[in-house]
Length: 419
Image 1: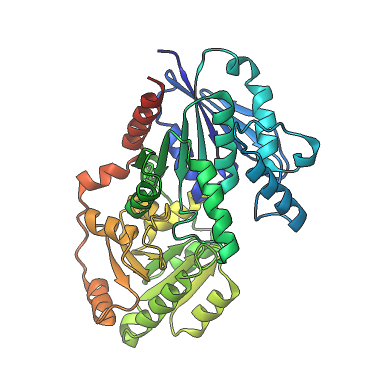
Image 2: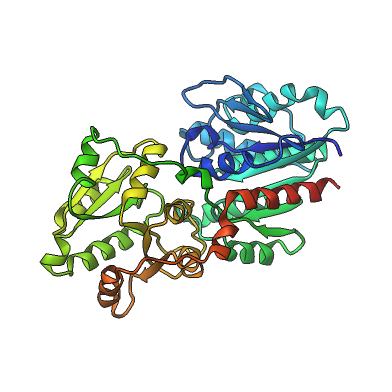
């Protein structure tokens, strides 16, 4: 069988955020003799240098994204994303749409793949949401060249949307999602509630589940703390236990604000002697109101700006507990939970509802969920934090989230579309 080329539209790939890890840590385990990946991403600092590494080519593209640009560019993007999908979806890129990322991505990719597109090479197109622009670009590319299409949703676009709410926006989201999904060969997503929703709304499409996961390489070797690091000396070289939270809170999902409030309120109910044994560590970009709330609570805390991922992983490995905050989304299966699981530390998840994250913690025996309105919440939390027994994770359940195993599953999905 010929080598399969997977063209992945993923605007976040070069951002080095948690979203980029979904494919960066997956592709590394895929057989380079059988697959090659061309990743079309958004340029960082307007750097459009194409990079190649064994079986991976990354093509950075400049351009505005829908909802992330000025009003005029957003309007151009909306026109392109809507009208670019006529009956045959073969609209030509032109100067009017030059500032749109999706239009620029299509033009650049066609130039780069010109010879391959005219041959019998095995090609699969794939888009990764968010943003919706990536799904639209991948669908356009797939339709124009009649190649299989996988659409991957790391969050819901219409289902439990994290964006602004209005009747007009809901209509637009429904139209754009239909454009992106109706001709897909496969819809892939990260949680069971999302799978159920897509199956209900797109009964003629194949839908599958592939959770985010953990890369076993992340926590291998000796993870040493840098004693010259001022944060390290203030947090880890003390006699206190550390409860660590990593990443954004309300900026990712506004409903997580209530979970932060509930956690701080619950933690502050511990008696003074017990509270004094702990330091709360928040690493990441927090909103001003979140910082103010933490400062106003009677707890010992340290807030740090975001740090590079390797350092964050080292910090995680040295914490005693890891704090996960989710909101009102039942489909929430944030990639952060898998890094936490990989750190092999007790996890506490404060949440607005029982969701995919709390389900994963329960099934893997790696932590406990605390619903904000739960009766006896304070007593349940105190019991958990006083329990000195180490967790015994269920290895068989954990292996479902191992990127090595997920890579094999992903390979089989791609092959099924070609054969």
